[in-house]
Structures are given as C-alpha cells and as structure tokens.
Image 1: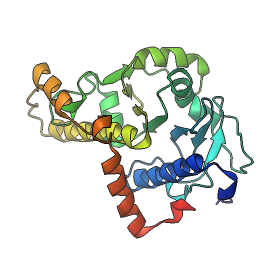
Image 2: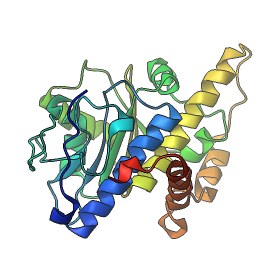
Image 3: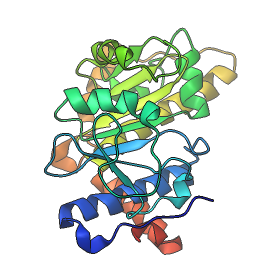
Length: 255
C-alpha cells in the first residue's frame, strides 16, 4: 500500500483544515454508501480563499484510506501545490477542472460510477420523471454525450455547454456528476439523483412500465423540496447526521 504521507495540521490555515476534515469525511461516507470505484473517481473542493487551488484524493488510495492530511492540493491543471508524496491523477481531474475553472460558484464537484447511475446514463430515456426523487429534480439535470474516457481537455468547453446552469449532469454511457456550493449541498443533490436512478431501475425491472409524474407536479415538488435550499441548510443537517454515524465507528479520517 502507498505510504500515507501526512501534511502537518499546524502548517495550514484553519479554514483549509476544516475543509480537509469535511472532505475526508465525505470520502468515507461515499465508501459507506458503496459509491466507490476501486481507487478511481473524485470528490474535489476549492480551497477557501482561493480561485485556482483544489483538494483531491491521493491517487492509489481507496476512499476509506483518505484522511484530512493526505488530501493533495492541486491547481486547475492537476499539478501539485504542496509537498505531498502522493501522486494525483491529472487525467481524472479534467472534468472537475473544467467546471471549477469556469463556474465561480462550483466549489465542489462529485463524480460517481454507481451501478444505478451508470445504468440510467446508458438508457436512451435517461432519467424518467416517474418517482418521488426524480420529481424533485425538475429542470436540474443536464446531459452530456459520451466522447470516450474524459482525459482530453478539448472536451471541456462542450461539457460546460452541456451542463449550462444546472447542478446535475448525467454523463451518457458514463455516470453521474454533481456541482455544489458546499460539500453538503453537492451531496444532497447527488444523493437525490442516485436514489431517483435506483428507484427507476427497480421500477423498470417489474416490466410493467411506470406511472408518469406530470411536469406541473414535478415543478411543485421541486419548489417544495427544501433540502437544496440554503435557507434550510442546503444538505448540512443530512451531512452532519452521516458524519456523526461515521464518528461513532471511525474517526481516523480526521488525522
């Protein structure tokens, strides 16, 4: 296993350390939810007080090995900005870099390859407006056509055009992506999309079709859903609850 190189807590601004702890907790929460893909995929977050500095998981470590101190600080090209001995995966940061770099409010970007998410991404219909969770995402989900493995920077402008001003992106034939102002905000968005995909797969497996939700009802559901609204915490209460459960079992992510 790669050496778990630590960066001294005392050398960091308090705001950066707090973000590192939250981000490391989020990696562990993803692991607990089964949203991991061996050592691949990323959750990235902009370092407080900066425009072009980001935190990313060390390449080669599983999500359950990520800690606050071994997260790596990089620039928008994936180059390391600290003395961490851990490698990063610049190719894997291409999607994240495009979004972070061009959207000032995109402080957090999350990308997953869950079975349900990828299945819906592979479906010609995409996300169907047929369940409680999908109904809360009216006009919040965009689509981007598959161009192969996302390692080429020239895809970035097309991806940004596909995303537009929506916080969720289904990468066709590929997976799910969420953009948020904070870690809890992005997580609340992604969790809702993930659940919508899971219910869609379960419903379709019945082989009897699904009851459609009208646009008018979906618009009402999206207005009534408070979990994304900053006035109601934008996912903070959910994240804090999951972190308490995490702390009851393992606090090593805080190191």
